[in-house]
Amino acid sequence: MDVFSKFETELSVRPDDIDLYQHVHSTRYLDYVLAARFEQMEKNYGMSMQGFADRGLGWWMTVANIHYRRPLGWGDRMVVRCWIDHFTETGCRVSFEIEKLPTGKRVCDGHCDYVLVTLATGRATPIPEDVRLKYSI
Image 1 (cartoon, one colour):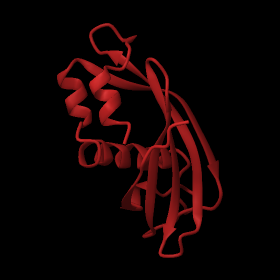
Image 2 (cartoon, rainbow, N blue to C red):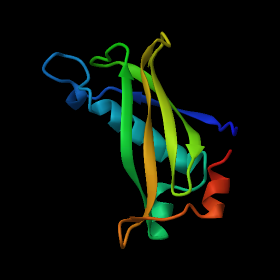
Image 3 (spheres, helix red, strand yellow):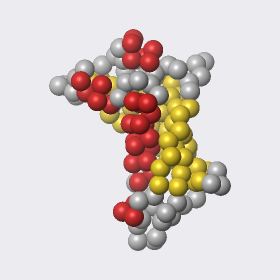
Image 4 (cartoon, one colour):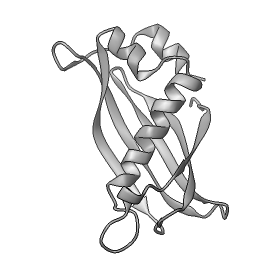
């Protein structure tokens, strides 16, 4: 079984993340994971989302699974930790956890499944070997 590196990104709750109940709306947690992944793809893997687009490729989310533990609120800071859990021929599962700073208490965790597609057709395509190597750290 392969073990892949975990990477961290620090983020803050924005005013427009807050819902009517005065905590972060449930859909924003996926935004935090996406923001972290975009940063980590460029900074840690050396191939940004733009790099995929330049090759006519893109990642489409097929599954999002989140286990909510406790809410984030106005002004809170967090660390978003992400890692590749495993690859398939045409995709991967990215697992994540979000912890509140400075306490380190778990806010949520889960995973997202992605499939690599050719942007021109929207069809799944095998992950190129050079991409798999870059993302297998």
